[in-house]
Length: 349
Image (cartoon, rainbow, N blue to C red; front, side, top):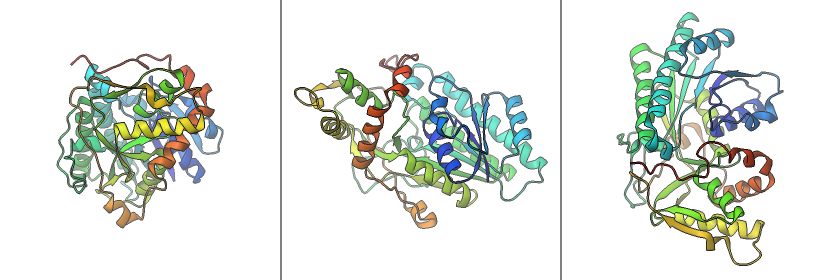
């Protein structure tokens, strides 16, 4: 299968690209190389047969038409997006332009190419989204997000992703474009850009800096190892039912405080401090505006229909992640100099 992967130099997109090449697919990696992208993420497959990189912005329709015509993909895996909630609070315009208008451009470019090819039934437009579109859950562990949970986004980021989800469904219902959608829980793992919670904690700990936790640390997230997510995404694009959405979760709910304490314990084992524990660096900071209390996914549909389950617990995945960051300072050190990295964002509201 020839896959057009947007955002393939980003965190999740690069995991998809690496796994797709390992699985024997051809990949066209389309990425604008904005601040959070890094071609080092796909360096291990850059010379592989069937891999092509195209630098383009999904807001540029002419570039998209050229790329579709040149490569004629069998499926699109659309991951390109602005994704950092704190940045969306400070600058929502970029999220509207990329996540909404960019998705519209991708849909129209894909539809034009699909139509030109005679509307093949086996074409797929796979839109990759987030569980944040569903809003916030109560503390009751029996209540989880399902594919029928009403949308209730609370941040500019989640609102922009909700809008893009609705566009994809509308292009299926109105124009017949063969689509599948997925909504995932919080990802973590190798190549995670160092402005997100887990890499921030690891790198601040190593630097002897405070480990910032919003509010009282009681916010709950379901954590999904990025390589497990890539496996699920490639399964859905090949075997998912057209017009259907699938929730992908790690089945690993933890409060932010529990997560950080687990990271500290792993660091204590893998790179002990001269004295004390990394947990001594934990610091509570003012919560961000609109911070959802809890996310949790019910992955029953993807398990029942496609047979997918996560392969690692959060403790196993975090241990692998810490080890990767300890071994790959040459990757993360230059990224810390990029705009906004290491700064508290999302406090202008």
